Image (cartoon, rainbow, N blue to C red):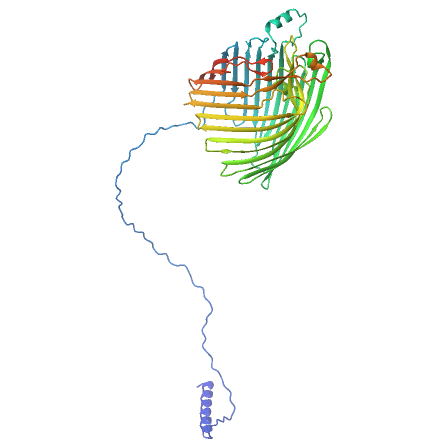
Length: 579
């Protein structure tokens, strides 16, 4: 037996003897001796964590398909016959288009278009037109006229820009036929030894070219730009000439929901006219020298535009420096705001505009070709044009726009007439401040591509500072146009223009016009007129068609300008062909 076991037995014996002995002493336990307890070794379990494999074995999955049969009753419906209209994704284009016709009063017409078809790299084209007439207006002087135009262009497309150029030539001929009678004119000319070259006619020649570079950025945060250059050399048979160089630039950039814009204008004009001692400076006898008017107009039009879900607001200004004659500075506030109601069914708007305008020899004679050879040139200022209106649509086919405006134009050109017998009446440009109050309404209707109708009415009141009347400006004007297409075979076009009674200024004595003493012209009432136009075109094939145009159907001999009536009913017919 081991020593440890012996010790355990001995201790147990001693403990038992002591207990017995103690109990014998009245319940007290007395243990005597040396007590040395010893704890035996314990058998402990090892509970340290052990990894357990969590990969589960694959269990086979099976799918059972239950056969189910659906019983559907057969039902037969009648089908409506339909027409399948197959169109090409891109219609065929023809490079050439020619139009030729002939009308009353020996009026030939010829027109040619020749263009490049679709191309991703470039585009070019040519347009040529001629129209002339022998006149044929009774009780006036010879009234021949002609218009000739040649226009060619080329555009090239690169990655983010479009670069283009254009050449232009325009030649117009008019006759000074504002006489009292043809017989008296022939008698005077027969007895006149030296008739000026431009006594009975006037030619206007316009030679020009233009260049343009325009950005095509898809990213609106980049600076979009459209820069153009246009040059015109304009001259007349009376030896007046003008060279105009116009540079424009439109810059814009979107930033944080706003669009910032800046317009730049540089317009230089050099005008030279021949002075004389005739009426209004017209060439009638001895030339007095040259009249030269040169000047540069510089303009800046900054703006900022904000678009919302239903509104649009634009605020800007027009800043101009005009160096023609005495240098002047001009500032015009500009603003516009609109708000959409009921998904653009009604859109009220309000705006304020102002600008400095160039009046050139070219612009004046385009408005009134029977001007004197050396008209006076002054630039105009639209001091303000405060307008407001309501536009919208009654339906998807009917749209409207009603508008009120109050404006004032400083140095607006007006035209007065004086007799220049025996060589026809001429008009001169006079300038005055004109206040304008205008009420206008416009209505349009469209039924698919078959019928389109559009009408507009303007009622205007004028106030003058110096002149007696707003010469030749109509107090009210009504225009109406309609186009009807019958299955794209017969095209009918109708237009109507009604101009109210106008006031014309007319000097009965040539010396009154050139007198140093201001003598007002005589006021003549020009009757209102209605000019009706009807055009018919029958398309025999997609390439060949015939047309018939009828102008001034009422055959009224009205005067747009005093002493210059129009032709009575012009009938013109011809054909067109694409190749």
